[in-house]
Image 1 (cartoon, rainbow, N blue to C red):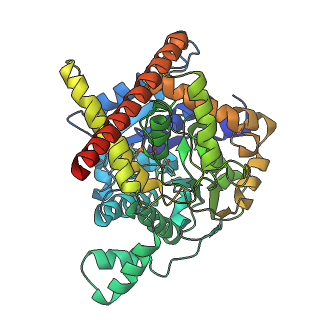
Image 2 (image 1 turned 180 degrees about the horizontal axis):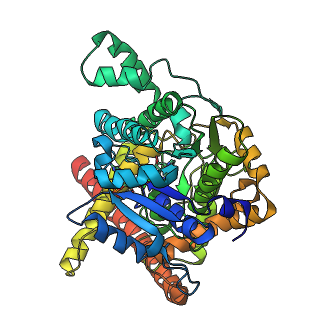
Length: 493
Ligand SMILES: NC(=O)c1ccc[n+]([C@@H]2O[C@H](COP(=O)([O-])OP(=O)(O)OC[C@H]3O[C@@H](n4cnc5c(N)ncnc54)[C@H](OP(=O)(O)O)[C@@H]3O)[C@@H](O)[C@H]2O)c1
């Protein structure tokens, strides 16, 4: 507990947005567990009929907050929920609470964002850019603000081939976008189209605009912009392989290891960029300390991804190794033989048809069987999500970058030996095979509900399923060929 970072937080109050999210939870848990922070105010909204206090209680009753039951860590004493929504002026926080935050908070971690790729530009703008602007307005009024850490994304610069770790104001920045979206300045519309065309989706575009805003509005408050690539399951904390989201590539990986995925649209040789969620939380915490104690500059961009340090790990290799684990230790939820990652540079023109036949029709067929057997039908929904996910990841799975890591390495190297141990975030030390193993076993345990004890039974089940699947498939082709042949003979005779 006596590392420089832990001591830095001693007696301090912090504000975290995005607490209920994948990264936010791990960040808050780690702050409480490994630093002497006084209070962590978490911005949280009511959702789906559950109020913010109940949501907080529920969140604190699950991983990552339940792992240290015996270690005397009390999360509920130091996590203080503050009802608010980024999209409201003043974040919709009650004045009395705003006054407390103003007096007490000295460090802000901004992790909240709309991360879905299929949301329209204006909604994403309101969430990711105006939401950040609302937060910054409040923070600039805090009496003792020391640093602001903004979680961005590596792909906010993903329209370039070299991802630098410095930032210049955008030609078409957040102010111009606002004018366009509010219907003013029609002459900017061509520029808007140009800007939209550069980015794969409105999420990455609005993350770039939010960075532009942070750059221009944070003034002299020490600010770190953390740019993780794909945030993956934990390598260590709260437990190896822990995760709670199937967004993006995690959803595709789990589909591959259960056999739902049968066709892909990647470039096999594109470098696989990712970071484990716990290391991302550690780097985020360390950057607040770094910006105050070590950094001479007011704003630092920290690119954070495995690619520069593990250039041999490509999409194809990642999925091949994940497949090896899945074949050796199959899940009891395996549906059919697993795809062998195809060595392709881009998808065939038949990809949409393949997706429909291999994923959608297959899911509909199994759902029909489930219904007849009296079970819930769930596969069609997953197949649709998988197909959508594949369309969304094609950009990331076919673009390769040169990622600058100078700022990141300076930060990592400034950590004391104790902090390197308590807040590991040096991706050079990451063992990729171990990470894939964690990922696979994490999926088995946390998403598929399998445990170690059922491996032998799952192996037998997997053999049977693969046999039945292949037998059905070949029988189908045999019957089809015989029918065509009979028809042909009938026609020519
Ligand atoms: N996951 C990745 O692969 C990845 C990669 C690169 C960068 N990032 C960045 O990392 C950060 C965290 O991502 P994540 O994976 O943890 O996302 P996540 O699981 O989807 O969590 C998003 C969080 O933002 C909150 N939020 C969204 N809109 C809000 C609003 N209007 N007011 C208040 N809170 C709001 C959500 O609250 P509710 O629970 O109330 O919805 C949730 O807590 C984001 O900034 C994201 O852009 C993520």
